[in-house]
Length: 217
Image 1 (tube, rainbow, N blue to C red):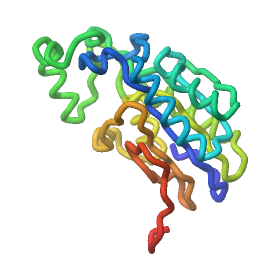
Image 2 (cartoon, one colour):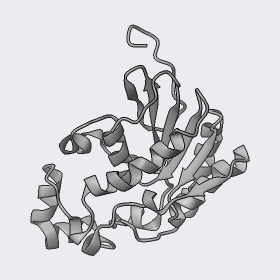
Image 3 (tube, rainbow, N blue to C red):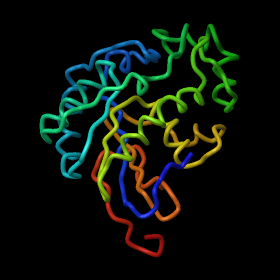
Image 4 (cartoon, helix red, strand yellow):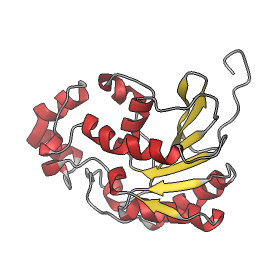
């Protein structure tokens, strides 16, 4: 599922929300609707000033409050309206939601280790990662298809949800998606459109993308 139209030179910035209290407490948030902390708001404000320099053409965001508040900071400095889509919510993780990592390991140890091994696991009885990709990746592609040539889309979402469309758009086997690693609060990944499809240009970045100067340009 690459979905690219060769030669248009579009860019997709997938931006994780700012810090929440549950992040600090190492509680599994999933689709629970948790607000940003004051630090999270400041993180979003700082990142928005950087991302505005990319001159984005459109912003689409999860409708959970932590993503909405993050997106609002970019909207404030760009003047763009934000489109909200529930399909960009974080993975629903059933009984895991609200538990600390220690509590998850104590109660669901076998399930947790199977997930980390790359097995298809319904964490806490929730969604599979491939199911998250099936709902989130089409949203990203639909909005990217509306961009002008060379345009930039900013997608404001959640760490787990961001990883799945990246894996899907790059054509990676779901078993390997975990190898992409997580995103820090208010950091982002950048997909650029190349001649053969989408390429991962930046991952877990907190500064503006630099051009590739060299033989792989």
